[in-house]
Image (cartoon, rainbow, N blue to C red; front, side, top):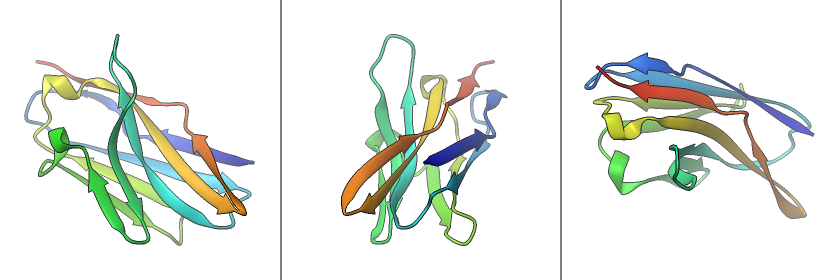
Length: 117
C-alpha cells in the first residue's frame, strides 16, 4: 500500500502564494506519475498539474501561475502556487500512479486552499 501525506494548504489573500507538498511512503516501486487535482464546492474534481518522467502538464487555468516539481529521492511532489485567485479555492488532492504490471492510482486526504481577502 502507498500513503500520501499533503501539507502546505491554508488561507491566503488574492495575489499571494502557497506551496503544497506531498510525500509518498510505503510500497513504492515504480512511480509513473505524481500530481495534483482539486475540487471546489459543488464542482467535480479537476486536474491541476501532473509530472511524469516525460514532463509536466497543467490545466489552462493555472498555466504561468503554478509550477509542479518532484524530488524522486524523497518521493515528494510540490506545487508552487503564485498569483492566487479566489477561483483557486478548493481542496487540493495529491495523486500518484504506480505501474506494477498494471497501473494503480493513489490519493491523498486533501488539503484546503482558501483564497480570500
